[in-house]
Structure formats: structure tokens, C-alpha cells
Image 1 (cartoon, rainbow, N blue to C red):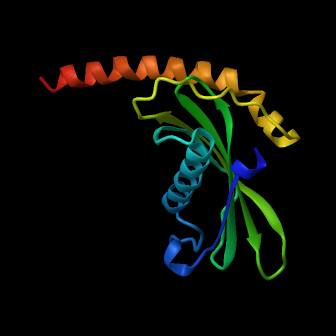
Image 2: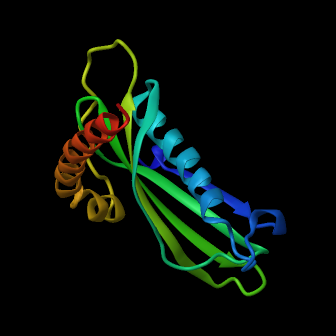
Length: 161
């Protein structure tokens, strides 16, 4: 699967930063969705769309003039959905020091008429195995959250009547 891993590195410029001179969270979320979508389509070789951003955990701010590297890969698959993990690291270009800045999980779904189920994801290295080990638990959590959210949306719509 290594050929399906997406690695993108960007320089954090002043226009990308907030009042704290660190990368805007929303800008990073855009980068995550971009990298994760490429990983999903590479794996499926079919048209995919983002169904949900399941979690984004910001661990360390990324300063202006540092680089940000995103590594995205599929971490689990169902019949028509994929989970993608994205690891985000920052680097002080002046010192070479790197740090884990954020992690994210997203879910993508197939949006074509092809009834063929996706190939079952099988991890091929220690990092993929580590992330994949929690896939079933995360999938069940997403399913419960989706059921709860549907009920919430129904109630919300009834309030608007």
C-alpha cells in the first residue's frame, strides 16, 4: 500500500496564519481533506466523496516559516466506504526539529453505480497495523454517532415547522 500513501509538504507562510502566527486550523483541515481524498481515490480507483471528518486532534501549533507535512493513507474499508488516517507533522526549517502537530480520521464513500464492493484493506507495515487495529471500534462509534445524528436532524427539522 505504500504507493497509495499520500505525502504533501507545504511551507507555512504569513498569509496562512492566525493572530498567534500559527497555521489556521481551517487551512490545515483543508489540507487534510485534500490529502485524504487523494488517498481514498487511489485506494478505491473510483469516485469518492468525504462523508465525514471523524476527528481532527490538534496537538502542537505550526508556526509561520515552518513546514507542514501530511501523510494520508487508508486505514480501513467497508463495502462502499473507507476510513483514511492523516498524520500531520511540523518542522522548524531553521533547526530541522520535527514534531507531531495533529492527527485526523475521515470517512469517504463511493458515489458511483458500480455494485462491486471495495477490496478489504490489509495493513502492510507497522504504522498501518497500529492505526488499523482500532478500525472496527471507530467504525462502530461512527455508526452510533450517525444514528444519533439522524435523530437530531429530524428533531431539528421538526422545530422549523
